[in-house]
Image 1 (cartoon, rainbow, N blue to C red):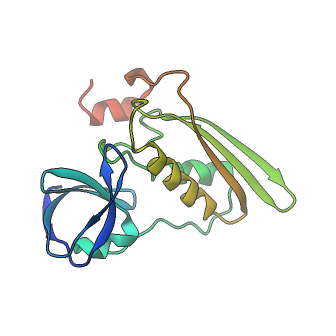
Image 2: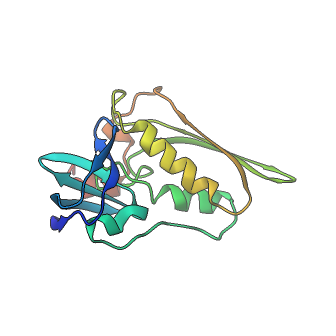
Image 3: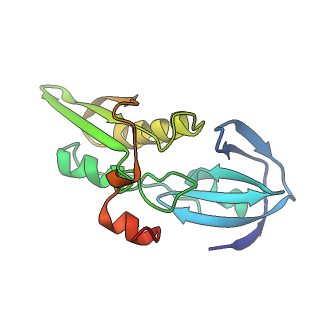
Length: 173
């Protein structure tokens, strides 16, 4: 994408790849390198950050979020998971092969959702940020009673877990 911007208002972002919450201040300039799902990946002063879509106006973009009025069923859960991206890789977490298991338990008062997922590398500091995004998005589904996102390390992720579309998109075929 590589679109230039000037920060319009102070904004909290997450540094990539360590996931540290960082304040960027009004007037700083940068480049939007990725705009997928409802978040932005930016580069400011040579450092990469993730800006939540709800804070898009701070970088001169539209404020956005992916909200669903749909009920928390298996199809909609997978639809939502397809909107979550690793900020360093322009492929959603499902096609990257990071989602290992979904458990959906229907109860009288709502749906309990458990997601088991991994990361491309165990030391990735963005893991809690990505897991929190998954939890927030799934929690917004109608009927979602509880959402638990577990980061797991077995089996260890490898490129063979990616979908063919992801491999094509990343030039691995």
